[in-house]
Length: 192
Image 1 (cartoon, rainbow, N blue to C red):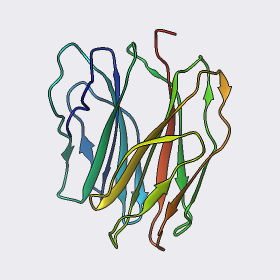
Image 2: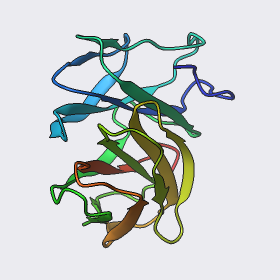
Image 3: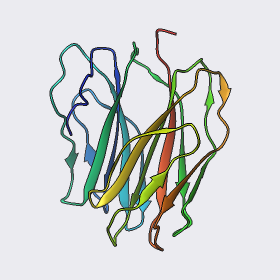
């Protein structure tokens, strides 16, 4: 996956990689696997990764999947001066109701005055085709990848300390074999 353009030293890169079936992922050097979840639909594995950009970064990054499977992935860069521990809090939410297009994420509770919330979501659709993510009020979608599996990422400014409250998303065109997993991360810019 290409490094997002404009990424400079101290920026935070967040990646979500979604691969089908029971294969596992090995990340590029320097990337931290914050969390992962297996068991979507036919066993898709979704991993959430991050890396604070150094002074010299390659033009792209490669994840190794343990078996040949449908895979999609996104990297987004968030500008700032992040230290070695930029994730203030995160919460994973799994919608286990197959075919339900409502994502009712409980949100996160921050411990510092964070600068940004990041939403990273994924599902595996064995039938294929594009489905549209509709973000909650105030969120900005970065991008969506429909390469056989489906991933999305979005962000929202959050400079407060405490609970964010529930975050509601929907997916249009969901079919009966689709289950979703998503994370909300509170990222802490060290400059605040």
